[in-house]
Length: 154
Image (cartoon, rainbow, N blue to C red; front, side, top):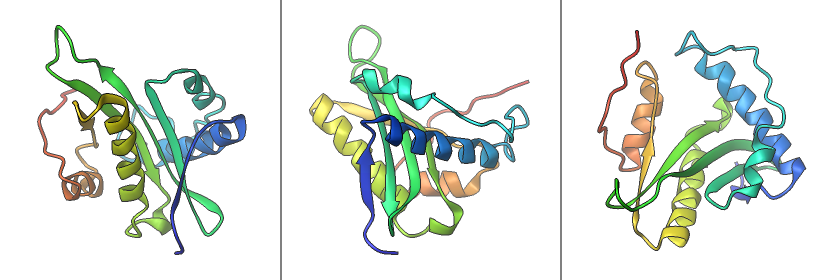
């Protein structure tokens, strides 16, 4: 794999690429959560995010093709309920054949740079992984994330 470029979404074409990646993420995540429709096709979801300055939307390109995607946003601003800004890494996807090549790490690093620029270092990043997704949990741990909460469902 050649150099990894991170493209922050700015156009409809960028958003269409992100939508395609999100569709692939749904297909993958349906193996961990039976409530997710593996046949879901995402169209137009990411376009709506372009108007918000509190949303980060980007994809990774290697060898002239999209190989990963990340969407994150400001979850909770510093203020009455929070001592710091909380940004959430809402969705991340790296095509299976491109894993272990630094794509996810590059996306998260750019997301962290965005948050640092936006909040002058006054933030924490939250991310989640399905309990059965050991690879996802290990990925986050390798980047310095620590588990703080478990969500239960019935």
